[in-house]
Image (tube, rainbow, N blue to C red):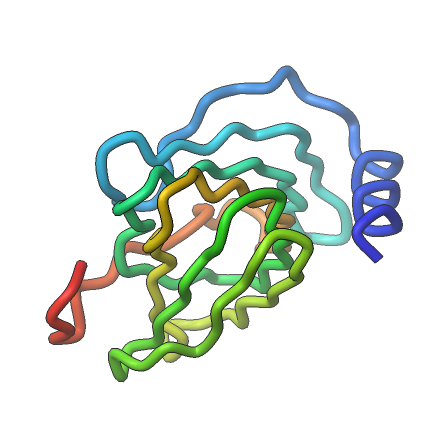
Amino acid sequence: MRLGLATAVIGGLSLATATSADATPGGPGVSGTVLSQTTFGGKDYVLRRITIPPGQGTGWHFHDGTLYGFVEHGTLSHFDSDCESDGVYQAGDHLTEPSGADHVHIGRNLGTTDVVLDVLYVLPHGAPLAEDAPNPGCDFQ
């Protein structure tokens, strides 16, 4: 599935020069690089590689479109706005993040090695990659 997703995305997108882009408000060292992007049918398709160092996270946020992710390396711990774990994803796992302000979440690296994610953002044209959200009252960031 990962190969099919990557092939479809890369094959169908006009490759852009890889550019650095900050992750949604995250801890020190959290970074993202846009690998490819295009617009088709009123939607922006952005393929991005995100790296989260040990002990860091993405910050609380939501997306205006659906995200499809693949864990290249490490283990991603994912939490919802009820401060509950809604998934732990290890290398080789896929995850989907639904759209909307009612899906506030945070991704955290609770391990000892970098988490590296390949993420396909499917967003309404012109939407930001993520919308910041306040901590919903969880004891962690």
